[in-house]
Image 1 (tube, rainbow, N blue to C red):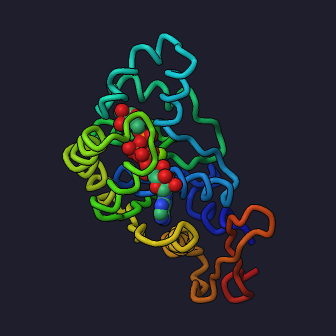
Image 2: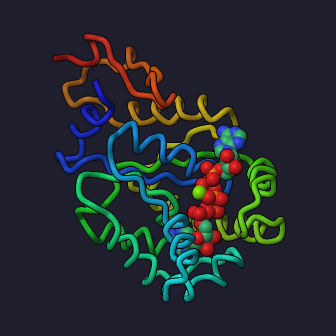
Amino acid sequence: MRATRSHERNTGGLGPRVVVAGRPGAGKGTQGARLARCLDVQYLSTGDLLRHEIAIESPLGSAVERLVAAGRLVPTGLIVAIVETNLVDGGYVLDGFPRTVEQAEALFNRQALAPTLAIEIVVPAHIALARLTGRGRRDDDSTVASERLVIYETDTVPALDLLDRRGLLVRVDGNDSPDAVEQGVLRALVRACPPRDGSSLSSARVVPFSRDNSARLVADREYAGE
Ligand code: AP5
Ligand code: MG
């Protein structure tokens, strides 16, 4: 049983639409890509998209290069247009969006794009900072990384509060190995999307795929209920 099957029960068949949030360095990219493989949906990282545009020196890339290098958010209208242009049908794992209340409202205003779940990967700021400064991306020097962490508190936490008020937010401990965090993410997904038939979730387990060490959900008879 793939994770999508239990999740789709609650999404009207449009596919799971999962926002992965967390401080810079929390592991959104690491976990988001794994989760998208597991759910078999599109993985979209706004940061990756912007860095790609910068790398190919497109007009969009030129317009945002200085902001991204300084760790500042790019304008909402621009990032909303990028997300709308790049999302395909069938569900998503969205990494790095929404990052402000305005962006969250924009996502909810487009019904087909509204998230069905948001997972915040929680790591302490000093752990996040240590991960970033050990990585070496252009916006990872300690001054810019610190600025990104501050912007997360001032701009993104209120957006997560909005998701929380709508009952969509679950939190997962990100201060563990990538594999352990992945297990936590998948368990949170199962807990957040119980089957409508009321069957028990106690038997949901997460097992590794054989090839890429990603994971999938399995369920015994009680959970599958079919
Ligand atoms: P973005 O690319 O989204 O950067 P970020 O939010 O700062 O997050 P990172 O990508 O640095 O970290 P992550 O949480 O993905 O962690 P990762 O898995 O890489 O955005 C960049 C910029 O683009 C923004 O500053 C802004 O300018 C612009 N932008 C993007 N979206 C925007 C929006 N919506 N609106 C406006 N502007 C926007 O892991 C980090 C490191 O830790 C890696 O080296 C990884 O290998 C390691 N690691 C991961 N997990 C673990 C673990 N469990 N244990 C140990 N190490 C780990
Ligand atoms: Mg990332």
